[in-house]
Image (cartoon, rainbow, N blue to C red; front, top):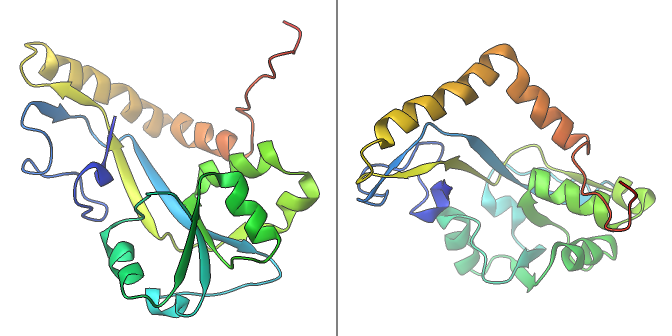
Amino acid sequence: MCRSHCSPYQGNQPPSASQSPATAMLSDALLDEQFVFFHLKTQPFDRQHFDDLSGMTLGGGLKYSYGPAFDAFLAEGKVRLERVSSDRQNFEKLLKERVVLYPQEINVGYAALRNTFSSAEAERITHHPKPLLVNRSYLMLPRQLAQSDVLRERFNARPQQFRDDGRYQQYFDALQAGHYQPVPENAAP
């Protein structure tokens, strides 16, 4: 799958023909990944603009881009971004109040909290409702494959059917509620 951050980010628009590989065609958008700022419930904040974050210390992933606009803001030096290698480390720093905010995709962040921390620890953390970044994901099909047009049409039909009958949203609601958790390796069949 290609995400809109595979090329220069253009908001909620699909990549243009000049941005997508010349050898591939894209399906309709499959998923909107919403990156949000996680924070402690005891340290609420509001932001309308990046400048509202000035002076704060944030957690972040190693060598990770949160989109061109935020990268440009980081380059201005108005915030400090402490990069570490894992969600666990970032959430630990948040819980210990060593950082104020941690940007992460909302579903990834809450899954990490559920799978890594106690309920009491996870309950201390929330997120700001305004997304930092929305990445759209697509299926890429090779242009040189004769059946790609037909495959794309067939592929696009099923997610649309799921959206129309409500299943698409039900699946994501279940994901956010933690229903799709990995089975422990030592679990009985």
